[in-house]
Amino acid sequence: MKKLTARPASRPASRHQAARAALHADWESLRSFAAFVDAGSFSGAARVLGVTHATIGRRLQQLEQTLAAPLFIRRADDIELTRLGESVLAAARAMQDQTRQLARTLAGEDLRMEGKLRLACTDAMGTLFLAPRLPSLLQQWPALDIELAMGHQTLSLARREADLALRFARPQDGELIARRLGVVRFYLCGTAEQVAAWRRQRGSAPVIGYDDSVPDIPETRWLAAHADGNPVRLRSASLVAQCMAARAGVGLALLPSYLLAPELQTVESTPQLVRELWAVFHRDLKALPRLRAVLEWLQACCGEL
Figure 1: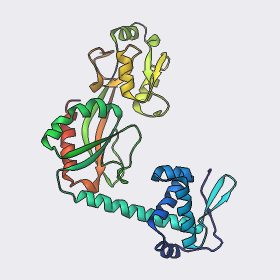
Figure 2: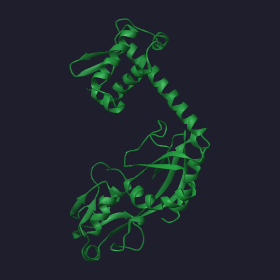
Figure 3: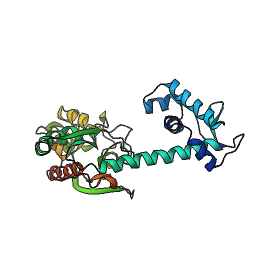
Figure 4: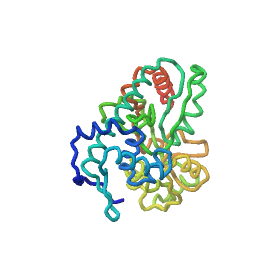
């Protein structure tokens, strides 16, 4: 599918008419329609909602039958939304927002120091920094259930894809609250042999870089500015993979201080890069006791960085 654009329906409908008609449509059909527009295909919507391709098709057919008018028109490889489709999509979006708001409100009113809290962070931070420090949190609050959502993809806090996220930039969204946890210092490091090669002839020392999935982060830009001509022996967005490769002698890697293993030496005693670390959460969860407990634990952990 190339695009979704508005096209007048054969029977134009106002937003008020669409809203009244939507009252007779079931929520699953509206949700499927919104997912179809977002994903651009039946199969994409099916993956998002965890149902079959046929289920998405059946729900959209039922929705059009309920509204007695088409929501979209197929033209070759393109699909165009009708005016009614645009109106119904707006109604579905509004219902999604209200559902998420209700979920956040209910979560914020749960005043027990127990239950699940989903924390989004990078694989290196979660695996090699936070996970070894979890006992201190869980010994104090044994009824907590911590879920680590690890990866470079930014999860939506508004859609409750995570309750709390660690980010290297302060968000501008007014619905989000950010607490500064401290700074993370990055060092170019490797085995003694690789560090000696860098000091002897900087341009010939092998390095470990990032793949194309993270082209604009400060680490990538630093390597481009200071090691652009060096031979690259490995590319990976995973700092865990980079760390293990550097420890094995593959090349020099730009790693955060918490990954500096005994077999790694730094090319300089001062960091090559310093980034601020923020804990970010939706304002509706600010009174949640388990979130406050995890925030205090994170603050204590980051005092070790």
